[in-house]
Image 1: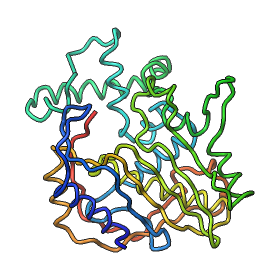
Image 2: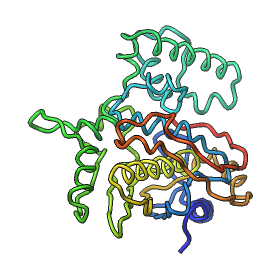
Image 3: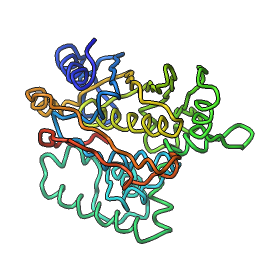
Image 4: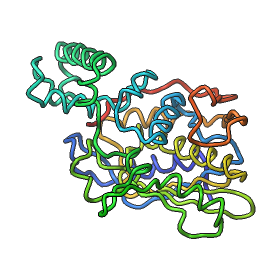
Length: 318
């Protein structure tokens, strides 16, 4: 069985060779396959891809944002993390309070219109500054709806109570390790219409055997070039943190994909990545003096021995 980074590169090849050309919500176009699984042995090292540089700091700060139950991009911006900006920015430029130039259709126009691209960047900087400095503005336009953090930590019930799924699953792993119900779901059908982006990674399940903790993620929609490398590292980190809290060793991260796609404007970047040789996996060191997943900060993590190929830039489809 092919595992680790080679499994990811095999997925890329499979989509390029066999993917169906499909339209999509962003009007970018994709090459897509349906139903795929990859496995990563977390005892072999931390699965941060080496065929291109993947920014661990962004992955870790986003995961901590989820763990805190936060849904406002202010926390991310305070940690110089811009990966969710476009969805919040879109809500602002579509509102009656926005008075700048038309910023719609950025994903296409920015590729051919330098003046538009410059205007977009200026408005984005203005938006970020207001999120960081204006509480009222941040509350109104920085919130992304009931996305991951809200569903993980404050799932709303029909009785108007809330369920802390993440806390409950940790308690379950500790007290009933053989249970088949170690599950956290981010897909709440009632809340989907109010989310800036309905959850792509929709459900994950933990499994305890031989003193090891494994995690399987089901991801309904997988942007293979930009998103999936983040998802692999994020859920590997989550598994390692929960294993640490529960006094377990790391097992496997199993990544199950629904619609796995390469955007049409990422094909050349994927081909560049496929031309590179895989390098040795790095190791992750965490601050062992902290015992609870809810106490970790960005400074508690360190990646050791990460020597990847250079990063490869590509536009995000919003």
